[in-house]
Structure formats: structure tokens, C-alpha cells
Image (cartoon, rainbow, N blue to C red; front, side, top):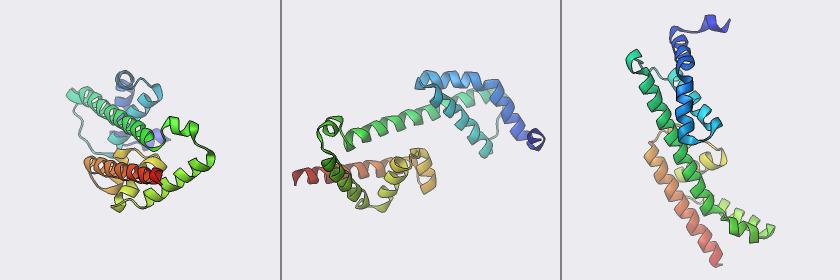
Length: 172
């Protein structure tokens, strides 16, 4: 029943999926070293193809798909790196081991108030969407209708403000 409802474009994309999935997955795995993330990247590329009306030429379809996979992998690696940096700034491992539950709760409260005080308000929204809801930065940019560069600038500004808030709190 479902196959009968598919458009010609959807059938074409499904054929491309079947034909090029293994090469695309192999490239993603070489770049990411993670099977689940590699599968997600390939699926994201095809999901984007279904939504966007990109014209695909048979002579260049494989290089195009592999470029899409590479770019999506670079986005995943960038997001991993940013997430690791944020984790390093927010709660260092050595502090967690030496901090009592009451002190940790107080630090979380200070951090929460610091997030609420972020300016401009879009900084709060970027932090909330990316770290609280777990949304990728590219999706945050799309939802807020701004460029990736703008999102990174807001994220950098928010993290700087949060570090200052935490340092002020330590001084007390």
C-alpha cells in the first residue's frame, strides 16, 4: 500500500538510498568512528533530500551524496567538540568529586540563575534548546531563523557570561 502512494521523486530517492547507502555509511564511519552516529548521518542526508527539492543529476549524484555525508559528519564532530568544551566549563570532573550534594545543588542554582540572566535573550534560548532539549546547533539555527555563525557567537557569549557568573559566585 505504501509503495503505491510514493511519488516518483520518493521512489528515486529510495533507489539512491539502496544503491549508495553502504558507501555513504562507510565514509561516515571513517570520519566519526561510531556506527550509530554514522547511520544517523546517512539517514539525515536522505531525510533532507526528501524535504528539499534539490535537483540530482545522475552523473554527479554519488559525489554529491558523499559531500553531504562529509559535511554532516563535520557538523557532528563540531557539535561533539562544543559539547565537550561546555561540559569542561560547566562542571569540571575534579569539582564534582569534591563537592557535597548541597554545594552542587547551590552551584546548579547559581548556574540556572546565570542562564536566566543571559543577555541578549537569544543566548538563553540557544543554551536551552541545545543543552536542555538536546537539539543540534544546526537545528537551533534553523528554528531561530539565523545563521550557524550567529548561533556560535551567541553560544560563545553565553558561555563567557556563565563562566563569569560562576567565578563571581566562587569569590563569595
